Image 1 (cartoon, rainbow, N blue to C red):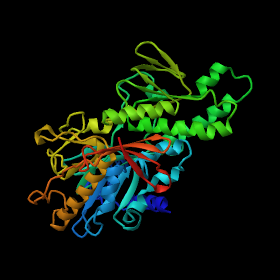
Image 2: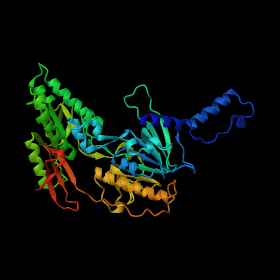
Image 3: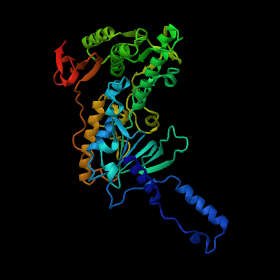
Image 4: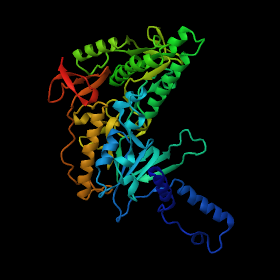
Length: 469
């Protein structure tokens, strides 16, 4: 099993670490040191080596690329990196990649969870096969840029019997692809009561809560008011994720709920709350069409700003209360605490500042890709949106660049200073797409080479029919 092999490799790496040579006690204290001197000496040695890990690579070993994160950017880089040139070490709190555009479908059973997750070991088999390549289930807690070393802590959430431990990894090249976190804008109660549709376990929680509320509402003695609350699904945020989830939920209500829970089918409702316009990045005609289709599907659209989130209701800025049984939060993303903690120049929005080659200019051999990075103002380039297609193409570009640098002899730490990196990264937007339920979706291609807007319909069985609006 890949996870067991990685665990064994991690244990072996800790056991066989190449620590700096220490002087023998006899050389320090004479031929017959006292017990107190021995205890003091070995306590000092233990303190100096309290965090085991992977030491810097030697001349007979391949250079090491450390990738922080297993999202779209990190996994594309891991997939394309030349394993004959580099050893790969991936550090992430999850051992798989999530195909995020399909997460909404798993919440209602249209897709199974295993259909949207791909293990890291399948994306890059060298991680499970090569002796110098690893995957570590851990979070990066700090980066020592001067010494080319990162500090990590294992992830043991939900396991009471195992305490997290710390270790260090030396790198030749470091790629920060740790992504971003959901934005709550400091709204009270959002983190405690809302569910963020970003990971598989979020979709599992939504699905569990939906089915639980459906069954609880069918129990004798439950009041009509409580039934309406239990079966009220509120989505905060009118971006693509919020709209797609609302569309999937409306399809679920019309098909499955009406057949399997006929006693309570008239109580279930979906409300989409947005402060401005839904799908604000799309063309006006596409937004109008989306509003029309969502309303026809039974989704209630509310324009308002949430100011408080409680266990059974949200409160808008005009003091309107909206009771809910399931609350899904999708209001965009922002920099994570780890990104904020890094002492490097920041791009607008708090992202890690990068140059045209996706490097962090203030440090050597460190790159940032995906949602955590953004172009510095000095590059005269706009900060790219937090989209999968941006992250995926950055990962592809950086893998090619690192492969070229490695073949040119610049794979080692501080060895690429005089190497020409070639053409900078250029992003060409291919368009945006959002499903709205009932086998319909919106595709905005204004920024692509087609320069047209299409409405796509009849998406069943892989047959795509497009109609221009």
